[in-house]
Length: 115
Image (cartoon, rainbow, N blue to C red):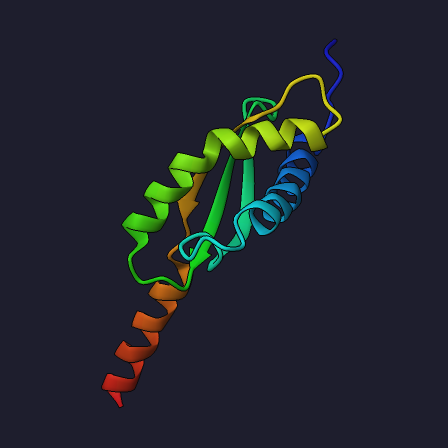
């Protein structure tokens, strides 16, 4: 009979990666106008913590430029993450824009217009 485990290792790994990547972005890219306005708001691990999706919000309205810049620095960030993470394997990371605040603003506007 197979033993059932409720491991939360992927969630813990995602949270750790989110914290470390936020520090890396702050330390290495504080002078970069596109990246300095980025806030990491969540992380999700997949594949047994082999892949981590990092969700971000940016104060810059040009999200496509911010995404392109984050895609450019992903390799460097992952290299620095390997130095700070005490793991044999470093997960692949991908940045994804989180539009929750934008959608909430649109809903607020719609509700104001109903009154």
